[in-house]
Image (cartoon, rainbow, N blue to C red; front, side):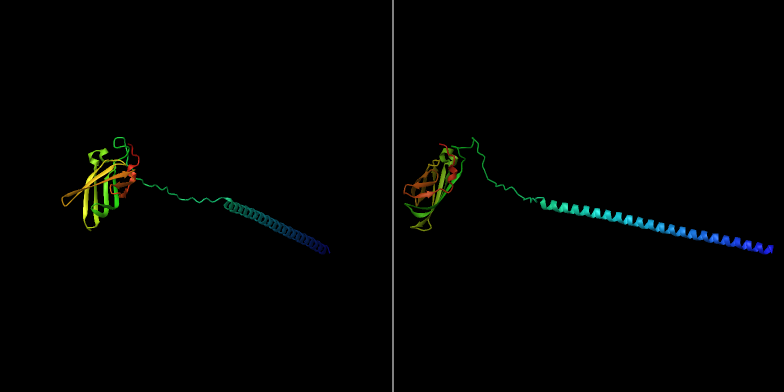
Length: 219
């Protein structure tokens, strides 16, 4: 009888131990599950927080980029555009002769004067070509000479007369020319009119090609 009681007591103790162990295991599993849930929740909250921060950063960057683009676009639209025009200064070369007091004669530089046209005199009618110096005899012997060629058209076509002579000088000077035809001498005289034209003794008026040669003349 006593032995049976011992066995029963031992069995009861074993049952109590088994029950206690089961409770602890259950408690441990519950705690573990709660910890797992807590960890999962924390991770979820962390993920949500990170996503929110990322979204906020992205939104901020997008807004900043949009504002920058808008500012650049506005600046481009409002900034006046200036087109640089290439300009090349144009220089016209003007040929000039330096005049000094030592080479001026009556205020002008010595220059050749010419005249071309038609003329009628005692030898006939023809085409005229005349040349002389503007300063004439007033500039010295080197500038006194004058010459002319006349190609007769009427009455004897083809006859060329070569006149030689002198010019007194100045815009109102006198031209004296002579020519020999078959041993006979013929003379021709004309006077300038302000360096613009010349009129001979027969009333013929010829134009001077370059009247500017007398510009600045001083008597």
